[in-house]
Image (cartoon, rainbow, N blue to C red):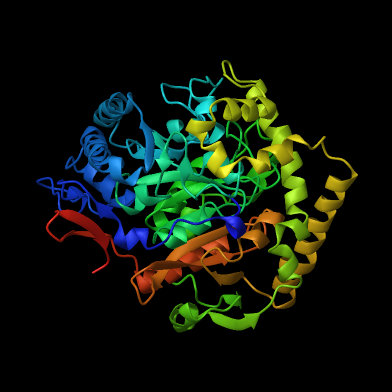
Amino acid sequence: MLSAHLNVLDPRSYSNLLLGVDHFFSAFHLLTSTFSIQEATLEDIRLAFNEKRLTSKQLVEFYLEEISNLNPILFAVIETNPDALIQAENADRERELKDVTTELPFLHGVPILLKDLISTKDKLNTTAGSLALLGSVVRRDAGVVKRLRESGAVILGKASLSEWAHFRSFAIPSGWSARGLQGKVTISVAANLVAVSLGTETDGSILCPSSQNSVVGFKPTVGLTSRGGVVPVSLRQDSVGPICRTVSDAVIVLDAIVGYDPLDEATKTASQFIPKGGYKQFLTASGLKGKRLGVVMKHSLLDHPIEMLRREGATVIEDLSIPNMEVIKDWTKSGERTALLAEFKMSLNAYLKVLVKSPVRSLADVIAYNEKFAEEEKVEEWGQELFLAAEATNGMGKKERTALQKMEKLSRNGLEKLMKEKELDAIVSLGSKMSNVLAIGGCPGINVPAGYDSEGVPFGITFGGLRFSEPKLIEIAYGFEQSTLIRKPPKFKAQGTQRKQSCCFL
């Protein structure tokens, strides 16, 4: 949730994760007679479908088998969809029956995992990782899920997350939930357990784990994608976006989910900013040429990426600073904490109230549930101090309105002013270091794999911009990705005599 306060899972888990199973991670070696699953992109899958070298059912079966084999170790998936194979078979039939002149959507027949905040009106649960919501029934698919289904995507299951988007207590380890246990956040895409996935971000939850797991995470402008039917933290800051292995895959998913949703007032102007023809047109290898980029919070790991940006034709201005950055990064000083606590209570109560069926109907009910089932929810170990602080709020009073005004001023006189004065197309930072800046302004950001440190731990580079600047960010991110192609799939090797495997970059 809030990256500045996350007890982030040690990123070495990506390269040092021991797998105590005999299964030898066939995701990186299995070949069908005509198609390689390893690192397959949406373009690869689409071509294989069209050339009848692969069916949606085969692809779903493969991913389900990998999840079955590896999830007891990775805890990357909370549950799989019992109807996934039926959806896949339907997609295969539609593909067989389609007119040769009809082009199916890119996501047709493609499995996708959804963060367990995103509602689905099917046999899957939507619980925010909490036992308190287990068995609850939603009224309808989330707005983004409705669009995914219209694109023909197969809903494979729900991915792990930090319980309640890490807004119950900062003492809870990142990636832990009572339902999913200690999940390895974004590892499902990184480890090829699924083609693409959909996440959410309030402040860091897409950009941070994407950076640490060498995948692409795209946090869109708030209001570009619907939050209708998504378990909320803040309707002012929440954003739904893709987590994929490549920029092109992320953009294809983005194209499928953007647009107006009557159940999310913030999307009412989205159509004004969605370019005719969609976002895929901005996937140009020469996208960096002529761009002006500003580096904030410079780090030595960015030296080589900056060199690559310049080599591809970008003008890079280093050592820039965003005014009042120390205040922005401290959520107690920026006003973010004050606003989020009140917003969380109001938005969560509204979400719970309209559920068809639910064991809990308010934040107060959730707090009481956690106290009653303290052992399962590990309340004694990690508490629920944010829940209690949120429950103590009483709407958007003077204090909360002052906090909102302060954040608006910090954003206006910070990121917006810097980018206009320096005539920048985007700002650049290591990993998710500027997630707070983007969060308070509702601004977009995209993380792209950028390298590995001396111990083989992945790190990413984030390109951030002003609201609705997605076209420029896509050009920049794709240009950088294509010039570096730095991502490596994890490799597993036996260690010692116990026949355990470790996910290593070799």
